Length: 495
Image (cartoon, rainbow, N blue to C red; front, side, top):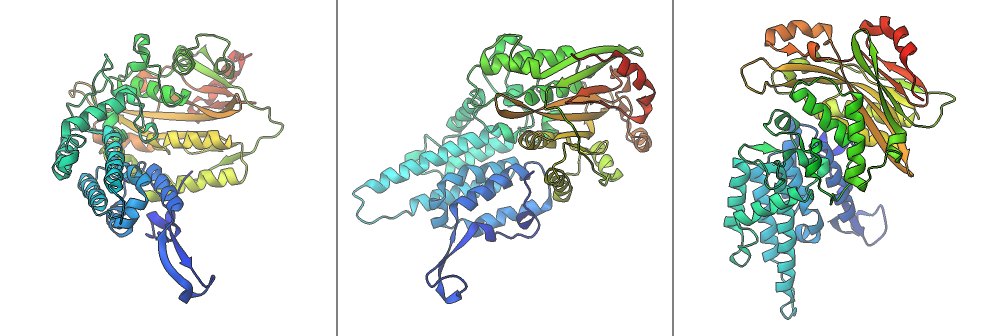
């Protein structure tokens, strides 16, 4: 998993600078000048873009000041390809003032370009650079909607040169923002849910009657958006610029069920999402396609409940190497969930990244993380890591709080387990996330729930445990349900 302690903790940017030397290495007098390495700057911003969207930490504020130090006029023009990355980092973190300042800095740098004996080519160069800037603004602002975003568009219109007033007009920017969303060209990897969940039923406009950052999981989770796009076969969009993965669909599915308190993902849901996966990506309606052979689900009645057995085709294991993480769980993190200010500091992310990376280094086939451990919005990046390295992970999800739809009843608290299983399809590496809604919360937290006047969604749970076949059979369950394990094995048959 990506991490960068040098920048996030120590404000160390040495990796993006290079020394131009004349007299060979190790001779200070031979240093001609210090330049920004374009490749390392782009790599650093790409890593920062992914990590900064997952954390909310006071150390991020330093990035605003660092932009002023790094991006001189010359560096700004030389690195025009990273403008969009910087702007996306700022919009993901709701840094509207800094966003405006950086746009203004780019415009000033473009206006100061001076090339001798160009015979008018300097005008063409400026027009081209302003076009690149406009494109970066259109795409990044497609992730943020509401009053602050609207105000930012108005400020950009004010500082734009008259000759480019049309490209930077507020209405033009908003029109292009919506176009980026409708054509799915906004950054998929910055959002916890696909942009389809924010489109209205006619696929025509974006819901912009409330302030929302599409990259912020807390605001997305409690927004009034409908999350029903993938359940409507008449709303197919056939020109996705990326692959819709099974994980995209199951994340959408479990959030919708939790939001509307509709229980757990069952075998019909999973088989339905496999069908949608084939339709959206390949216009394929065949039942004998690869994903149907690789991922299989079966419902099993047991003790008055329905439980789900999952099979994911993978290599056969002669030996299995399992890593068990003994990590720290803090009760204060649970309290912050209830108070709608979850802990997302860098130290917590760093602990997860170090744990996962160590399991990968030790060539573990499976990593087991504690109950209630992983923030939900960190799952997509973890799943991509699992796919890349073909490692399975079982983890508890940090308790999810959902506000009531009518604001008249207490919020619900949900306890989930996630199992991430890697597989290979046509030589491409993927992973599949299966969610299980548990019927009990951690015991130490019941008292806190009563104090916070929230409720557990125990009565909505439809299954006790999940059985997974992944080259070998294993059960995901708490000790509370182990008494049912004999019944479970007697029912399982996943041929």
